[in-house]
Image 1 (spheres, rainbow, N blue to C red):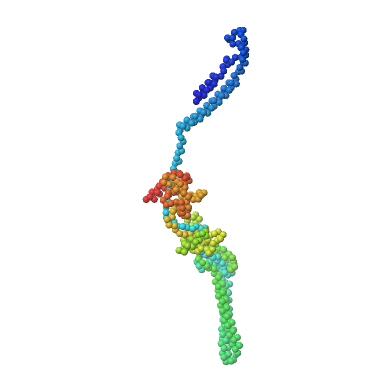
Image 2: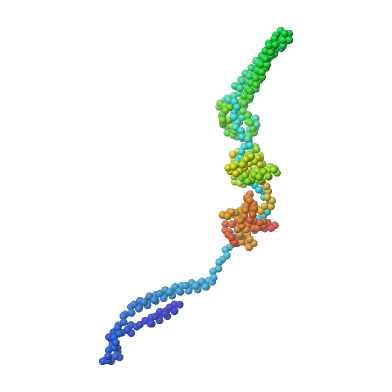
Length: 435
């Protein structure tokens, strides 16, 4: 290439006119004889400065074109030596695989619930007086009828004695009236007294008899008031924080009361479910009581197991939910009034359900999907429909078939068509499954 450019430059220079071949006007030639007729006058040639500049420009242009051509030629030969570019296949991605299996799966309906005491009672006094003593201890377990507090009974004991005295007085008058009535009856038979006198005495006996009965009622009322001075527990349960201290004057119309007692064994959980589940719940309740699990807020720790007790008699139209109530024995007191729990109502058991580990399920813009390992060790993305996820197992309604292999761990490096290799844990699981 460079040799051709040099030959072109040399030829160009040889064609250029020599300096000594240029003659000026009026200079005689050597062979011209004197006396001859003068030759024609030739104008003197101008110096060749412009021609030299043009030559230099052309030479530079040729050198630049040659250099560019040389660079392109060098690159082309280098590419030819390397041969056609080949794209290397990416390495296989290590993953943990699992198998799609079939087994019986319980179907649960989940709802947010609140623990409520089976019974809650605010203990209030029923008579006025001074609170002489408080017997219970805050947080104490009490039984039905157990003494809680004592109000000063002296005023009410006096009322009982007063009523009893009044009754004795009226009983004496009644006895005398009856003797008089008997005498008047004999005299009336002998026509000594008139019928009017007899009737008056008879009315007097009836009056004193009614007075005695009224006195007895007063005595009973006074005894009831006296009994109210002893405050006892109305239910079995646990006492709360004391609301009134010993020595205070209490009244029957006080709003606060003495203490609040809650029954914790058994205990209730009230929770809600969508109204669409009502028909299925009623259908399953017809076959027997439905179990309910009370699960902690971590959605994994089971606190207690009970039975569905009642379905509310109306649907909440503002939320479209139905309220349900379950009863739990709560022997270990793991449920406490006011506690929030996740209530899981066991509805039925699906036979031979399609199950995969929960980590197989991935979430994307178009919903849930899973990476399925094909026979050539490449993966494909398969959309799936998940019914529920329970205890690390996902129940699949559609998208996977029993026996297929799926990626359990390592999905973040995968894409459609990626080649995978199984990790040691996956190989161990497959060998155990083969056994």
